Length: 150
Length: 205
Image (cartoon, rainbow over all chains, first blue to last red; front, side, top):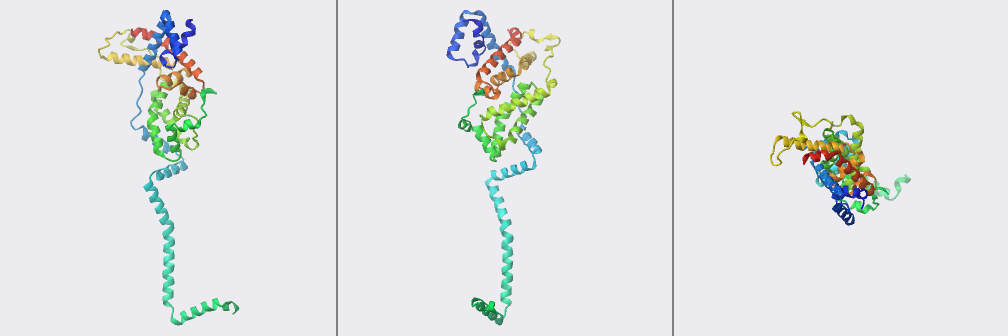
């Protein structure tokens, strides 16, 4: 096995990606080739030395910083989306908002109808007996279609 | 097709991070928080190692997640979340390198203490002395320099493999290339690193 053909395999030997057959080829070759054996050792050391580059830690408030930047850059419709998402996230909040909207829609109509009823009742109470009799007669005439012919 | 692009959408939908992103798309904000907490440190370090610029790494990592945040409406998984995220990070890091080449950390200054070359210092490995801490920093500087000098594709492959522990298939997807090409990039990258770090490694013996 020529050194040139095995060079790539040697560089990837420690990476756990070689097939069993490829690993065996390297093992067999380095048994008899001191140069490739030294190359294999150097590659291993190089790969290990890369571990000296330590990672950095993010700042402890990186999450809140992110949201601050995000909301600052947000367009108005994105803010609405986020508000809607906040509301729908909490069921209790969603129900409360829905209830409030319902009350806003229903209450004025109910109040208006109530006032209308109160006024109507007051009008009925104020009628005399003669006026009541007149209204009943008018109803009878309307049923008999007499009013239209008058 | 490059990167063994897997058209099996079901496989991507099985990815729990893709599910989180889809939930976020549907309006569930806490899902994005989970993704942010899981991936921000990794992306931060990937960008730090790729650009060798600790000062800018946080800003760029933030930009990556802002892009993810803003893309939620059109999110349509055609890869795992991780490879998609790393692709965005790689592009942001590349843009930064192109913009601020001259502002990259100078890695060329000589590593000396009191006029002496630290490489020749032979210290007792069992003792903990200030110059040992400096030796470690020295080793880190050498590694930073060696990786910074790699051609960009080799650097991408090396950083993703060594520090982010991604598979060849994942690296191929991120780099939009084949696994065979990734193998070749890693082999050449390692060979270049071996050459640039060989004298330093010899001095440690």
